[in-house]
Image (cartoon, rainbow over all chains, first blue to last red; front, side):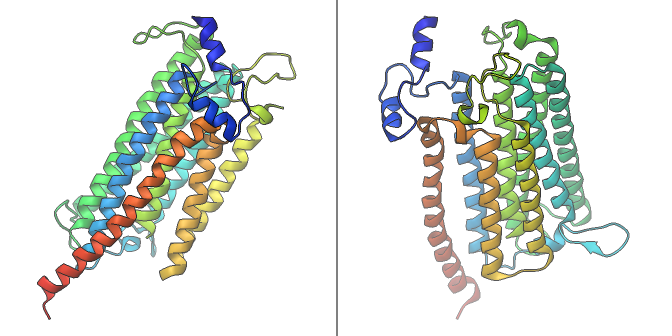
Length: 239
Length: 119
């Protein structure tokens, strides 16, 4: 079993068009040298891409088809620190925080494969802290919009009613992804800390041997959350 | 070394490494680039760049950022073509869907113009 699996998992063809055709038409597995968990995470992220795409496309449709003026997003999300309000500053800070969390996550994956447990755990917890900060700032943004500006999913004083519904749906779904990611990060960090991936301790659910690939799979999810924010930032906040 | 294949690289210490192993500097560089690109796209709004120049700049920075994240942070550039095509090609169909909805929403907007605003 192990022998056939490794034989099927070792690419024998070059990484070009010929290799692509050979991989896809081969027995057992199309994704050579990619662990099954990683391939499945990619497939999941692909499906998540479609969900977020549908949200953004519906946002585009309602924004393009409304006859009412769209609120000035730059002003709505401005924040004043005692002086003149700075446009979109909170969103900019949130963007930088999420990018930083992606940077620390990428390094955590790297140190995981180097089997540097301490650095991996510290970087993963730092990533989780950045993520939690992001969600906290989003909660602040939501409460400001709901309580002070009077934005509701069915209407708002600044313009088109669709602004509220698309805003809460898109950022809410993204914030939910970040929150789940923070929990997921803490869970995997605990496993790294306990040495599950060094001792190949079996997982409580899958009963498969622990492996540092889990950190990379976790990283894929986290980078995807950052990736979605790149599109939300461009289309919702900047457009 | 490790950057060439990204698989089963041998470290200087002779310790066998598995999986995606690249120098840390790669990630720091990309991190810095993402900061630069984000700042640039924020400045587009800050300086009130409008209309087509605004949209072009926003889309350019967005695509560059997304590309860097997927290629380097998610290690896509070191994967085999079988996985790259499986993941990258299907989302391109979303672009087709987007254009369909561009026409649809323009049509709805036109209808609303006729019925709500009147001649």
